[in-house]
Image 1 (cartoon, rainbow, N blue to C red):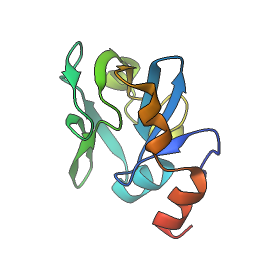
Image 2: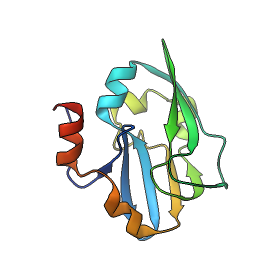
Image 3: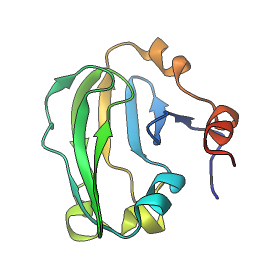
Length: 126
């Protein structure tokens, strides 16, 4: 199971990469595997300012719908539009083509409060 060491993670199975004050966010390999085949990704929070842990969207798999929680407070500035036509990219490439949103982070120091790859591996028993 892939858990890149250059990313941070949440207990809710989102991953985060940070460049300056822009965070790219998606769900982890573990999460997509647990959900199964992703058929739809919905994000209706574009251009909204949200607090940490607020729901920023949902991901729908064949048998379930799951909320997506924002790991860092900030403004949702981009949605990966390609997921509208190819939501299965979340399954095939969760850390690349399957990214979901970009957020202009309110406080970049909060990034350091997220889980390291080692912490996340311990959380999921990997």
